[in-house]
Amino acid sequence: MRGILTALAIGVFALAVPPATTPAQAASENGARIDGTQCYPSSMGSGYTACFTTKGASNETTTPSGNVNEQFNGTVTFTIKDPAGQVVYQSTHERHYQRLVQNGVVRTEGEHFSETFPLNGKTCTFQSNFQYANGEVRYSNFQSGCY
Image (tube, rainbow, N blue to C red; front, side, top):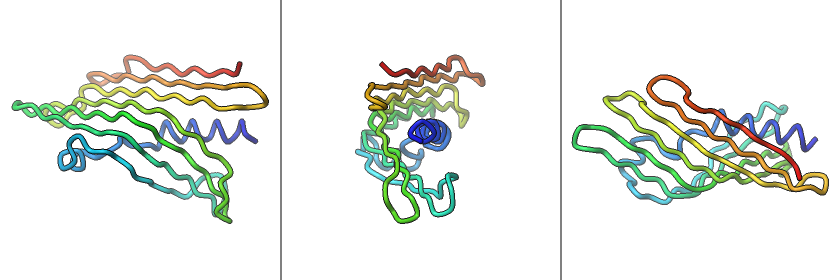
């Protein structure tokens, strides 16, 4: 079951976690500490809930020409609760995110996240690196293993 939950966590984390802040939040909270939780109904079954708790530092810089650089460094904790509210899975990932927007168009976007967790007496890790630039994915790498 842990393998299924881990795969679910990885897939949901990669697809569902938005940038740490929206541009409006970053503009009003430049250099801000982020500490927030978002919860959603989980696709695991009726009554299950998936939550993401984001903690770290967010920063947005706007140049005189209007280019916007957004950054986040911190952690995201992914939690799945059953219908009774009991935690059935939880993991914390480091998250490093960067995005450059020029004239309202995303020019570059990159993210790195990783996790280490115990499984069947071994230490397991996964890492993901992603880089998007000028309309195409330039680099996408996912690695995992248990030792």
